[in-house]
Structure formats: structure tokens, C-alpha cells
Length: 391
Image (cartoon, rainbow, N blue to C red; front, side, top):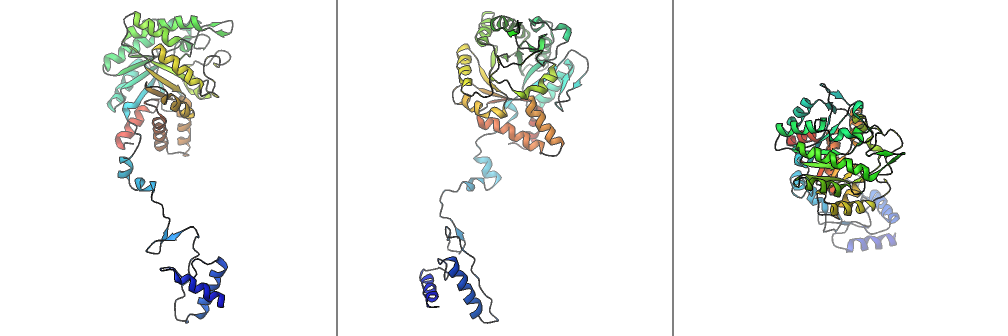
């Protein structure tokens, strides 16, 4: 009992301290028992909570951690959060991919709910609707009739073909829009590959000759940017020279700088009916295991005259987006690809995700990682959501 009294006095000696506050747990328990037995029956019994030995008490007796820097101060209200927000997404960031075909109907794409292959008049109507909510840029992807497909993809540079026709229609309807056109042979290839096939191999330089013809055809139709997605070595420089030497110095190049041999492209290939006829695309698209390799491609594309550089896919490759952003002064684009879109749609349909919140968060993540431009099938819908509640 004497030892307990000493501890009690010691605990009270500190100004503002409760009796026994610094004592071991066993002693505090003993104190509580003494108080309970010695207090008058009519008095309320005060039982001290067991204090955390790492916490202090403020002047009001509340738990206090003496930490000056508290990041939560900048999160305490929506007004404060918006004021200090590092990144924002707007409709001006988006390029809207549109699938087109020569039929006079629209065909829904089963693996991409909400997307369809548009007839050309429908493509114009969809672009106008997106333009009205702030989306000013579009990229065109054609589904080509099988009868027009060849190994060398000659239909890719037919001036009366579906893409040049679509470009002319789109620019006539929306002269201030920014039109991007895909440069690659896979939609036109009987082999389903991005280049010419010889003996089971996708040959590089012969393919580039065809790509230059394709880019020139698109430039003559009025495209603003060509977007070589084929991943042949040296194609950006060759296309730049072809465009410049034919008077198309104003036509830009959005280079697919780091396009990976990804499993996330399946629904896109459904949309274009462009699955490889044999093998895969690993001999020309980047290995998903490699990050530093993207910097080699970046250096080449910059030197060859690219105006923008892109990473595809987007979400699984945020680290690659950041690598490019840290190593170039060019605008960096991210492609929010079909597989990513399809996963969000599927989860939302099952009630597993809030589609609006998840989709906008994904787009914001691209901006945080360093993307200046985002190709996304959500472009029109996201623009509507952002009008209702900006990020």
C-alpha cells in the first residue's frame, strides 16, 4: 500500500497529470480497484482509460500527437481539395476512337458494350454529339471487307477507301475538329498482321514503303495527324520524310512509341476483325516485361520527327507513361485500350464497381502518371460526366 501511495503522489506531482497516468498497467489496475472500494456508495466512480504510452494529452485532456505537419489539413473540405489538386481531367484531353465500316447500318460490338461499328453518316453524328460536349479530337479505325484484304494491304492507300472518305466527311462536318488516322496494315491485311508477311516473318522495310503510301493518302484526304501503330523500326522518320517531301509539313505524327504485345487488345481486334492470322505480334511489339526499352523507342521517335508519343496499353503501363514523361518535352499520350474499357463495363454491369467513379478515376490516373492526352472509348460519356461534376 505504501508503494502504491508513493506512485500516486509521483503521478500527481506533474501539473495537470492524472494520478498514476505514467504507472505500469498492473499498478493502474490496482489504483482503479482502490478507488472503486474507497469511494462513497453514492459517488460516481471515475475509472481512467488506459492511456497509450506514446500519446500525450493536450490542454483539454484529449489525446495529442505533437506533429506539426498534418497533410489532412489540405483534405478537410472539397473546396480545399479542389484548390490544391495537382491534376485535372477535361474533355480537351481526350481523343475519341471511332470504329467505322462501309455498311449502311451500325453493328454493336459485343465485347465493348456501348461501342459500335458506325456507318459513315452515323460516325459524323457521333462525332458531332461528342464535339458538342467538348471532345474535339477523333481517331478512326476501319473494319475492312475481307474481299479487299491482301498481304501488302494495298487498300490502305486507296483514295476512295473508307478512311480517306471518312476523313473528308468528318472535316467537312467539323472543320475545327482534330482528326487522327491509324497507320498500320493489319485492318487491310489478309494475314492479320501490321506489316507485309514473307515466309512467316513480318518484314520491316517493305512494310514501311506501304505505310508511307498509306500516310500520304490520309494526308491528301485532310487528316491532321497520322498515328503509326505498326512498331516497325524507322517508320516515323520515313513517314515524316514522305509527308514533308510531298508538301504536308503541317501534318503531325502521333507515334505509338511504346506499344506492347498485350493481352488487353482482344475486344479491339473483335471490332476490326483483325486478329493475327498466325502466331502473335511479339516480334515487333514491345515485350511487356520491359520498361527501359521504351526509352530507346522514345529517343528514336523524337529524332525521327514525332510530334507526340504514346504508350499503349494505358493503365497496366502507368510506369512507362511516367518514364516517357520524365524523358521528353513532347506531349505524352496514353491509350485506355479496349480490354481496360471492357473490364470496367463488365464489372459495372455486375454491380461490382461504380462505373462513373471508376472510369473517371482511371482517366485521372493517366494524368497523374504524366499523360497529356488520353485516347479513351469513354471520351463522350466522360465529357458529359465532367460537365455535371468536374474533377
